[in-house]
Length: 261
Length: 264
Image 1 (spheres, rainbow over the protein chains, first blue to last red):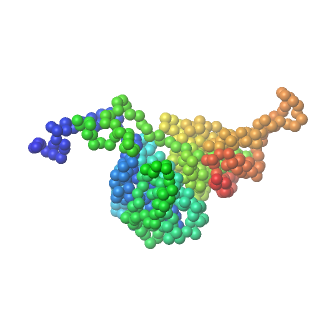
Image 2 (image 1 turned 120 degrees about the vertical axis):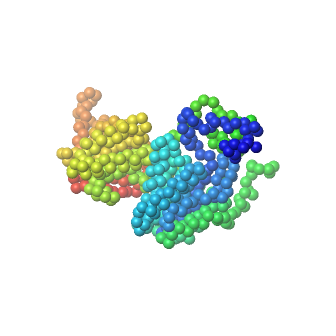
Image 3 (image 1 turned 30 degrees about the vertical axis):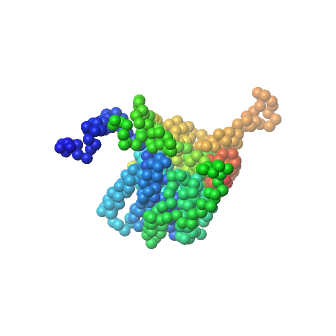
């Protein structure tokens, strides 16, 4: 036992060798995120006549390892905005802290009769993302901002690590862009059809997408978070389980696994 | 010993199934593997006439084979007085990397507004065009990856159209197509607007052939050309489609139209 405080809580030098101080990067180039490490997969969202539904599973993967199975990737900002995060989890946690400080600052400084709405928050986040990509130090995320805009109308838009932004009546990041978007667009092909979709239909649609994603996305999980944003506020459920799964189709798959024929 | 049991994640990110992660650091300098650009597809087009300028662009936004959205405008009113674009006299169209396009639009818009506040008169299109060139060239070594087209009316009230490359080279032209389907649309415009390869009937053969002389087209004809150009581009280019946004700048202001294009 070493009695020197600087050694406390560290691997013992006599067993593991001294700390390799080259990791401290006292000189040499700054290290930026060049690729994500712990990642979250798809986020899916769809607008309906009085709001937006958004969902993401609770898994954070380390490559192909399902590393953390209780990571909440939907973040409630205030009573009318939810942000969904795909991509690097540590960068998500940074953005979470950033949004926390923004929220506190807003609540102290401005008259609270007009809180930041979804459109404000999307503009803010997309500028953060674009600034970071322009510094060659990107936040490795793809975000969906869901909520209500300044006129209390449903708002859904995306921002990614390059600062690219777009809005649509249905959005999905990562694998969801391939698997969920076609399902979502079947029901909500354009902005006009949003008016015909009820909350119940939208929730059902998003749940169906989460199920399809769980069937085919190897980096996904059957535990997920889902949020519904309406004028009444945010209804965020963070511990949902996929229902009505049917793996009957798996019986028919040949050529993988242990069967002989 | 320490290097073997390194608990730090491997430098190139976590490995996938069955892949042995490296236990020693790779030698030499690591290069940035982050590429800060992408191509969001789409196409734009501008034609100037005697007393008007038309700018047009499709509204599809893509990444790879995916459609991000069917409505992402590429045309922006510059120097307007409010969020609804009232009072603008200049239109900017940008195609290429959409995030850079938005940043460029925002910067030019701010500059044109500040000019008006400071000088008490709206910026001329010629001045705005040169300023845009400077903005682009200022980022010569980390360019805005966009092809910009700027349209308005010049001091004499004639249609003015300026086109740019990503680093700020610019030129006033009668017509220009940019973006994904530029190579499909531009030759059509050369022929129909600048009357290239069109000769006076019966003027002779070989060197005796007399070129038809281009002159400013009427607004109705130009609108038809734009529509034809885009419906044809949609047929042959996968990144073009969904909607056609047009802005017609005349002395009475900016008239904006939207028409559906094929969504396939």
